[in-house]
Length: 262
Image (tube, rainbow, N blue to C red; front, side, top):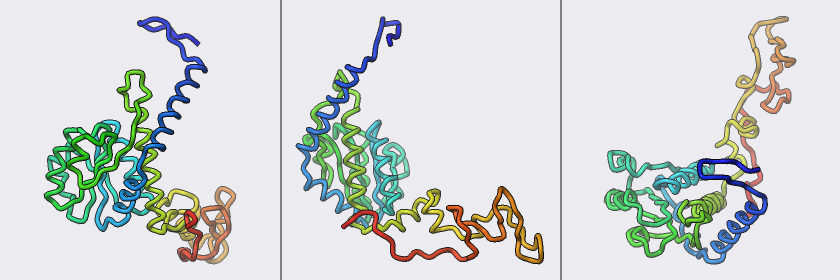
């Protein structure tokens, strides 16, 4: 289909899309060929061993990825949070302490806002870890440790829009988050408890009183409520998965299969 614009006709054909996706795949494959897994392991180990909070910060698109990685770690039970670099320099750095780790995401490794943040975070005793695609950048030199994410180029025709670098950052961050879950021996039950809106999280956390529908004590025939609403006899109660349950205590978590095999 062709669309007319002020600049003239433009089109999006399957052949062009296939070529773009193939190029992106090749750029990502180059990352996997060139990345140094030793530095990735060091990153995972520092996060897993952190006794305080793992703060993430970044600017622009790298900042969005840093936020995503932080919340992925949180869902796995890691104490982590996002720290806006501009707000940090105007008071928010007060949350940073000596046991904390500050992870700074930057494609170029030269983001001024992040570089300004480094000496103040270090003065508070936090360790600084830089993550960038430029081993010669200032961030690699001022951080306590640095992770290099090799980048051949951006898929953008001008090699400017961060579309390949952010994909690499996401792959790096989320894969390392899973590695940290393994290192901390996270169980399926622990993961579910951190997701109370999910089906299994509800099953583990909620008692009958939390999920009974239309319960009115004393209704019906002498005490035990048997009020029916929505096709469910609420006197007996139901679990989050719809099964009957007459117990009133919160289920305890017995042994569960680990999230991943050792």
